[in-house]
Amino acid sequence: MASAGGNPLVLPAVLHLRRSDADFTAALRERFRVLDFFSSGEHLPAFLAAAAAAPEPPRAAVVVGGGSVRVDASFLEAVPSLRCVLTTGAGIDHIDLAECARRGVAVANSGEVFSTDVADYAVGLLLDVLRRVSAAERYVRRGSWPVQGDYPFGSKPGGKRVGIIGLGNIGSRVAKRLEALGCIIHYNSRKPKDSVSYKYFPNVHDLAAESDVLIVACALNKATRHIVDKDVLEALGKGGVVINIGRGANIDKAELVIALREGKIAGAGLDVFEHEPKVPAELFSMDNVVLSHHVAVWTEESRSDLRAHTIGNLEAFFSGQPLLTQVDADSLVQ
View 1 (tube, rainbow, N blue to C red):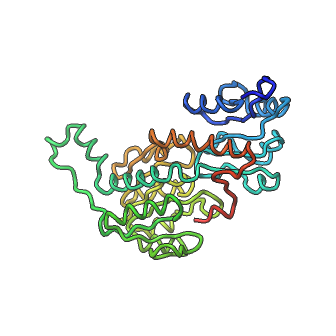
View 2 (tube, rainbow, N blue to C red):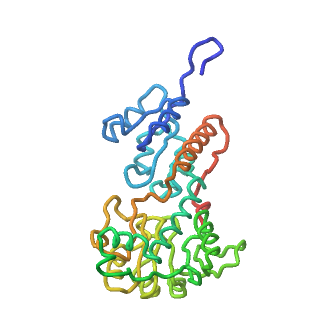
View 3 (tube, rainbow, N blue to C red):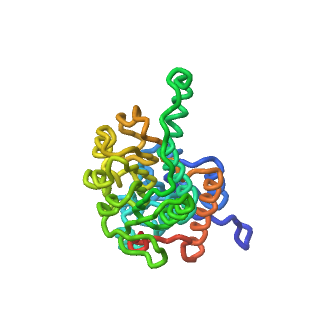
C-alpha cells in the first residue's frame, strides 16, 4: 500500500492472540501490521502494554477460545484503542459481550465457517459409538479376533430418537443429516423454531427422557454450563448415548464419568472437554467412549475458509463496513 506521494502507508495494526499456521499468519501480514503474542516471548500484560503504547495502537484483535486469552474488562482496559475483536471459533464464552458493548467494541465470530464440518463430525462420532467402530478396530489390532471370535455387534442409527441441545447453525445441520439416516429428531433451545417440524422440549431433562441419543450443540454460557447433569443423564437412561461437539463444560464431567462407569448410560462421543487439553483419565479405558482432541472444526477446507473469513472481517472493519458475522448477546439464541 502506498500514498499518492509515494510514501508507504502504515498498515493497520492487529493484535494476533492465537497460534496460527504459516499460511494464516502470512495472509495477515500481507494486509496488516501483525502484533503476534505467541511469537513475542512476552507475558500477556507486558505484550498488551507495549501494544497500547505504540504510536499507532491496534484497533482490532484476533483471538481464539480455549482459555489462553479472555477478552474481559481487564483485557480491554489494557488496550483501550481496541474497537473490534474477532474470534476464530463459533463460541464466544471467552468474550465478555456486555463489556465489549459498553466500550463500543464490535465482536465477530467464525459464523458458519465450521458448521458443516462439525455437523459431519457429530454424525461420525455417533456412528462410531453406536457401531463400535473404534472399539472393534482396537480389537482387531490387538489380535483378539482369531482368539476370541467376533466383536460384539453395535446398533444402527435408524429409528433412534435423537435429542439435540441447541438447534443453531450446527445443530440444524446435524438434524438434517440424521433425518437422512432415519432418526427421529427432537430438540431443546431457548424458544421453539417456527422453521422446523421437530418436537420441541422446553427443558433438557424432558428431552433426555424422550431420547435415545443426546447431542450437545449449544453455546456455553451461564445457562448452559453443566446443562447435562446427573438428572439429565439418568433421564437418558441405560441405553442412551451422549455426543458433545459443543463445549466441554456443557456436561458435568464428574457425573458423566460416573454414569459411564456405572452403566447408567450406554456410551459417549466427546470432542470437547472442560479443562482442555486435560481429559478425565477414567475415560481412556472405556471401550464405549470415543474421544478426540477438539478437532471437529478442522478440515483442510475449513482452515482456508477461516483464513478468508477472518481477513474479510478485518477488511470490513478497517473500511468502515459492517462485520461479516457480528455477534451480540441477542444473536446467540439457539
